[in-house]
Length: 209
Image (cartoon, rainbow, N blue to C red; front, side, top):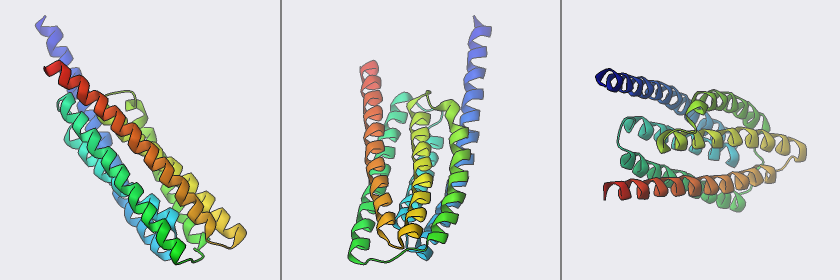
């Protein structure tokens, strides 16, 4: 019996060490890509790149929170999932504000800058998604981190679409249209993370009571 309990404890410790290692890696990647995307967004005057950069920043915070609660109680992880949902919602609101500002101050973005930054971001996001995929059906902590990473894939593909649209039409509206699509994706993702976190929080609260 003692050997069995010891074995289970070692398995849990190994799993948590693996989770921490993956979260540290994706956290570092998202910090770097956030800086790159914001610089490229300002240079290219792109709303779609700005939304992607803000998403990278939100993801970096999300991964930091996920790292902080590895090995914590299920209730603590559920609370952090609710915070993550709030971060995604905050990013969506900033993107909405940027879209409104661009509508009031129209400009044609530089499609070359959008395309190069989008390709780099897409490659980084592919790495993050691959690292997190084995944990996507685990606890709510890692599942919500995977949800954020999957959103990043949409960001990268959408920004490439924006670059192609700006080049094809020589206008700024494709960039704004893509930013609008990303806004909807953010809102949908925030709802899913909120729902999963609330469900888990309620379940843990019932267990305690």
